[in-house]
Image (cartoon, rainbow, N blue to C red):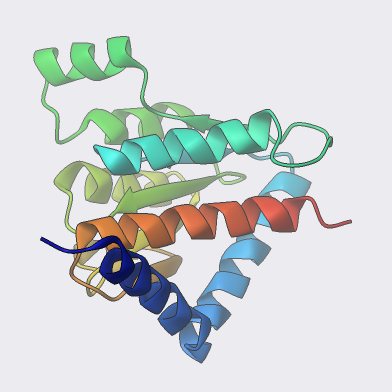
Amino acid sequence: MKGILEVLNRSAEVKLGLAADAQFLGEFALSVAVLRSVVADGGTIYACGNGGSACDAMHLTEELVARYKGDRPGIRAAHWLDAGTLTCWGNDKDFKSVFARSAETFCTGRDVLVAISTSGNSANICAAAETARAKGSKVIGLLGRDGGKMKALCDVALIVPVMETERIQEAHITLIHAWCELFEVV
């Protein structure tokens, strides 16, 4: 069993690796530009994911709609994790297309979908990205490992290149908080 120092050091190592990666930092800057453009244009930031990534999608949108650290106007953001919609579509149709249905319903050319998948291969997240792009939305992927199938479906792919799901999720929440901090910079 790992000790706390090993867990903390590995978590820090993953984030320090991202901080030293010029290509990753360039992709992050591009993601900020896309998000700011969508907000300036009056569009909406949508987010989806499965399991822990679903929680990250909710965390992102609540920080944008409500507040992060300071008082500022709310930012149009919504997650696609309504239990009624998920279970209705999953039961009546299938779970693979549940987020694609939301993309089909809500996405426009003024919006962006933040699609979160630690493997980059979640079938329902890939389907959502494909549908969002077909509707004219930008897609930002918060991905892990090698980016999987999602990498090719994203306008911007932020890939945490490690195999451990828990370390990927920790990096994703750090990136979400970094976006929120940048929205509060005047």
